[in-house]
Image (cartoon, rainbow, N blue to C red; front, side, top):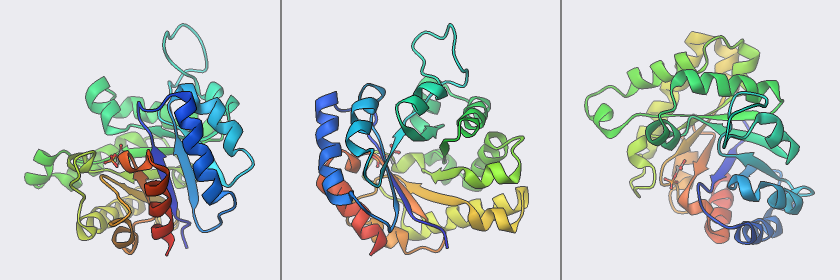
Length: 252
Ligand code: PEP
């Protein structure tokens, strides 16, 4: 049985005070919570203060990105050690906004995943197709290509620790969620492909989140699908009540 995991990606939103106030609100609800892993990914500037708030609770801290080098002349970047230092246990890698706006490649994502695992953190690796690719019947081809390149060189024990977030790009921030059937079809394909890359044991273990306009009123149907193990939530994770409802409805 795979443990559900709901993560909130706050993107480039919230000052430190605002972030702390959301963390305090969530901590009230999930001080102790055993039914799912709950992860919040505030912006870099708020990580440390948010960590202080949630450190004794069951909520875990994640970062939205990082660079793959340990230290050095990389102006503007954040290293894995720095994230570990402020209490991060998860790091998102390869979000479609990183790929599409900042030109991140599968090779970059592969390097990031390696170093995240090396530092004992858990990567949330985002993959997913554009609308045009779906319309042209290329969804599975895109997913295969991303999985093959992003996980290149990984032993099965490493791959099993990666959380895969299936995020169809046309559903991110658009209010247009994939239907539960569309999500299940892609999740099943991803799990089967992981089995082809590794073995059945790995594919059964690996957790696959759905991401793309997840809301309190659609999470239950998504979670009811056999291969949907959780959600990566953007917009709706910025509000204490909606994120709380999403987590609660996910495990009902
Ligand atoms: C995301 O940014 O990963 C995401 C899924 O965003 P939203 O929930 O706002 O669609």
